[in-house]
Image (tube, rainbow, N blue to C red; front, side):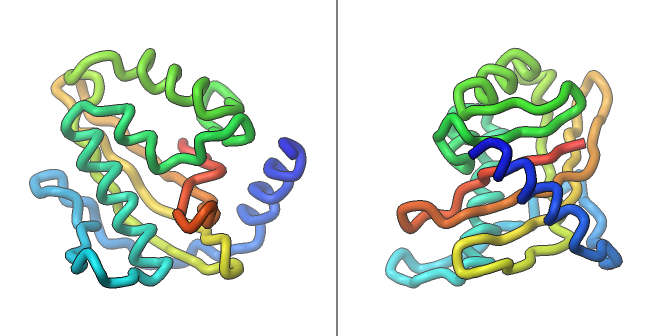
Length: 163
């Protein structure tokens, strides 16, 4: 299963053109991913994914890593690829976030800029974007690619490559 997920992520990274015009991140305002939807309204997959990411930014900005992680697949096959290599599993990913961002100064305020939300199939979406952490200790940021999968009716990140 792990080899299949790695293969899927690598295949996706090579299949898409990234020639998109980006909306610049605005670090002076709240993330621009918020979607207002009536509770009874069924969201499109793209809108649901954007809402999930907005919810993640809100949780992060409140200092709640556990809530932030609800956007990820709670499974041992979750894959996170970062500067330290590949991490497998929800719990290990959560532990790494908590170790790296152990206080509010390290967490800062998170801002996402979506560059592309691409449907791959009814159950998979590929997302490319920029992230920015505004911090007292110095801002950091980079690019992310996410593979979303619809699991039990909910969109979840199954592969995250953040640099």
